[in-house]
Image: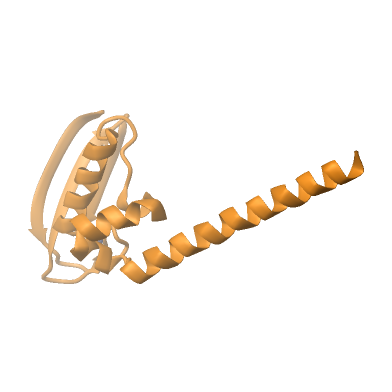
Length: 130
Ligand SMILES: [Zn+2]
């Protein structure tokens, strides 16, 4: 849990990478800067305000707000649907689209089928041998 924490909205003076989506924050953009001491380490982070909002919403939902804070960049493909629906601006920045989600689900389906096929083969071999 943070021992010390501060958060403010600033105008970007030097382009830098957003800690959430990984995209660049350009000069003149609004950015949310937060700094704090977390488990004894001093941290300083810059994010798009929308990315921070999405990140907080996610951790609130997953109940990881204080113990193991999950950054946006750690979201699993299974969580993309949520991001796309609740935070479309952030999803767009991370290049997460309905097509990519569909592709991911299709891939998951193929992997499941492959494993089921392997299991069937093993079962056939086993019963064939006995
Ligand atoms: Zn961002």
